[in-house]
Image (cartoon, rainbow, N blue to C red; front, side):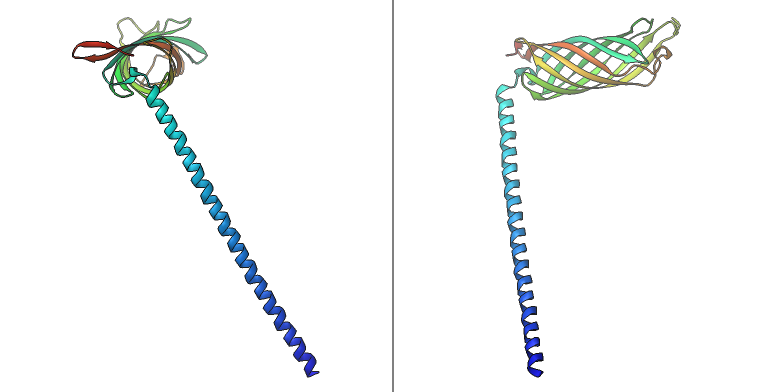
Length: 230
């Protein structure tokens, strides 16, 4: 009986030791697999970062080699276009003019004028102001963001002739410009306008508009006058 109990105890100890060894080996294998996985993830991350940096550098090189001289400091441009918008189920048109000057690469500021008319209504408005634009991409297809502050006056049947219905507005613009000729570019933009007040004839008031226009770039202004842009 004692021999049987001793034998069972010995076998139990062997089983526990074997289980502990297997568990330790399994833990080491899992740890090794986890470390290999982490190493693979790190290598993939490095590869993605290197590829991304390469593409960014290619993009920068392309823009530097192909950017238009239009957007360099001391360049003058004039432009104009039409815009379309809708408010309270009504359509209005916009005629806009602008003249700008580049102070820094891609950064321009200048003057603008807008004339708005509500289709089928006596309402019309005119405003003038200052604007600023920045062109982050300056190749033959260029993007830009802009802002303006304006002062204007409204006219309609609901406004008496001796009343000066004045207002101020702030405009925010996002658009694209396309090179079409030697010194001529076409652009399309979306502009949102925010007014401190507007005539009741407009309903909820005009604001957002889609604009199409062209710009003519004269060239750099220096001591010897205007040098045509390349």
